[in-house]
Length: 160
Image 1 (tube, one colour):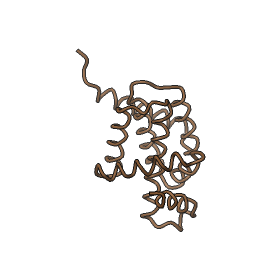
Image 2: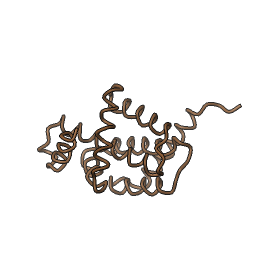
Image 3: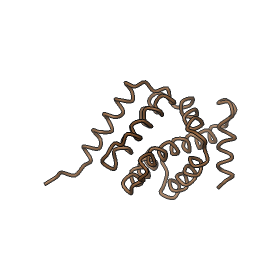
């Protein structure tokens, strides 16, 4: 496992044209998952709802099965804990994701933040910080937030 983490940091420092596509894709997935995990831990309570939401999102967006998603999350958690900051993760995404991909990631991030039913100040701060590091304008961040809120409202069961 530590070899995967070392490879991530070694390959994430390569110029974009030097990294093979499969390595870049793996590193981008790891970086996106590390950001999601950072958000999940922001309020000091990584709830079961947040975990389930993250696992479903990772499987759906990256086309992974349950085992692959668990392995990716395990590697991303190790990378998150060992990283001195978010810059390495956000730099990869900023340089390789299109605006549309960044919007989808922001929407998944907002949905994760709201999956426990609350928005904590640290989560809101972290979302704004990550959006700046991703070079995602505040208008786009607001749109992603609105779409995540709408999606969550549609998926909530009706109250009797």
